[in-house]
Each structure stands twice: as structure tokens, then as C-alpha cells.
Length: 240
Image (cartoon, rainbow, N blue to C red; front, side, top):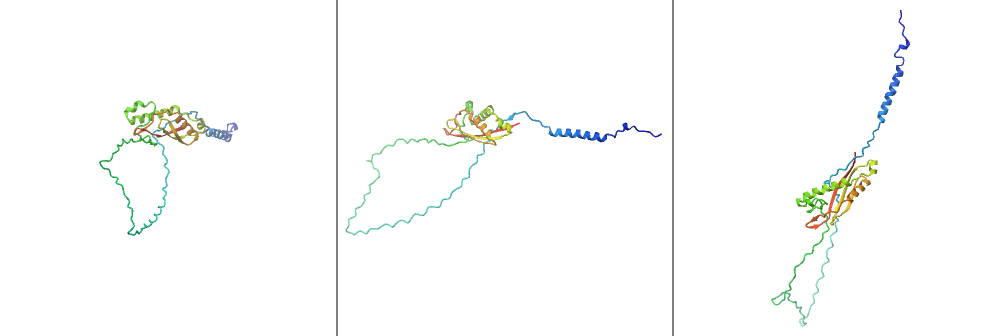
């Protein structure tokens, strides 16, 4: 007796349809995985800076201009010799003696007073004899120049961290980088001649605002005289 198969029991009847459905589902999940995006809502940033990192100052190249040598002086004219007859009297010139003798009165000269000239020079922070004193570092003066420099750098770092504000427009545009700042501590202790160089004007503007809030300091001195002291430092703007 020949066995008969039930057509409903044929498992391969709809295999092509199942394969197509399964393939479509897999492609859908793969597409969703490729299009998935995750946004970082953490707006923390790094404001680390290295005060010892000095600005590289670009020294302009000077070209020595060679001037032509001056022309030689013209030859001296020959002296005219006048021929005088023997019977003509010639008046002789009398030269007074300038040497002093015992009867000559000697005038007493007072002590010469040396006038101090105020030299308008710039002395770098790293080589100045008496470094500028940041407010709050006066107690370190007795410990020497190194202690004053360390205190100055520490106070500068605290000032930057306290007044630092990342520009919102720079955050939105994803702008970050390092701004090199150079300023001069004037002879009266004020801050002047602030210069910035960075990747974006908004970051440079924020760096200038921070430096503009620096307090008045005790000016630096070289050989006992107050001088201008240029100081350089980088301020790093970094998004994380």
C-alpha cells in the first residue's frame, strides 16, 4: 500500500517566504544599528595650563645694510709762502703761558653728583633679581627668589581657575585649543601690553578677560630699580 503525504505537513512549502521575512528583519536591525547616535551631554572641560611653558617669541630677522665708504677727503691746498723783504719788520705772535705757579689761585671743585638715569628696559621673569610679588606671596620673600616664583605661579593658576569661563559659542561650535598669552608687569605693578595668539577669537577674548582681572602687584626690581617684567603663559581650552 503506497503511503500518502498530507500537503499541509510539507515543511518546505513556505521556506522562501520565511527566508525573505527573516532577511528583511535582519536588514532592519542592521540599519538601525548603523543609524544609532549617542550624544554626550557632559559639558565638562579641562582648563589645565602650564605656566612654565613660555611663549616662543619670534625674533625678527635683521638685515645689515652695507653703506658705501665715504669718499676720500680732497687734498689739502698748499700753504702760500709769502716772501718778505729783509727790511720789513714782522710782528711776532706772543703765546701766553698756561702753566700755574705758586701765586696762582686754585679753585676748589665740589663733589660731583652722579645723576641716576632711569633705564626703560624689560627684564624677563626667569632672570630678574627681585621677581614681582603676587598679592598674598609677601610672606615668601624671606625664603628667596625660588619660593617667590613658585608662589607667583601657584597664585596665577588659582586666578585662572577661579575666573575661567568657557565661551558658549566656542562650546557649540566645538572649538578648543591653546591660547598663548603675553603681558607686561609695569614698573608700578599694573598689568599692560596684553597680547594673545590662539585658534579662535572667542578663546582669545576670554583669555584677555582673565588677564584683565589680575590684581596690582609689587613690581619687579633689577639692581634695586623697578623695571618692566614680561610674563608669558598658555591657557588651554579643551572640551571633554
